[in-house]
Length: 116
Image (cartoon, rainbow, N blue to C red; front, top):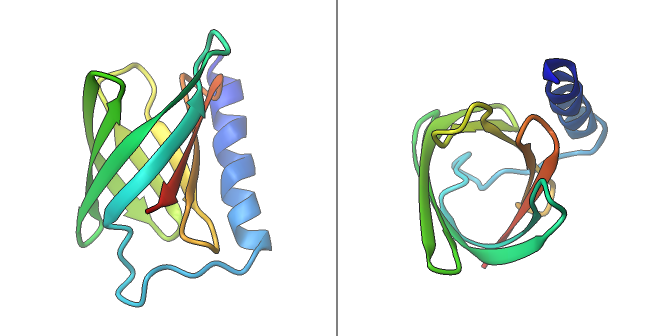
């Protein structure tokens, strides 16, 4: 299982190198995002995420239906890693259009954040 998560993270990080990427002028990903994803069971979900950033540290709040999930982590270049209390973190890549494409559950689930 760990290999799949590592492979997913490497593929995401590698794709970030192949496409020119643009962060906000100040390098920040802070803001409000629309969330779309697919969980491990294959169910589709949507919601809203709020991201706060202080340097390389980030705080996330995801609102999915009535559930509120909080996480904290770091941004290193275009890779964002967020501990949210699960065994495996959410790992996002910052895309050229400012959206965040990520995986969680060791690469078995997907999450996409689009700036609002």
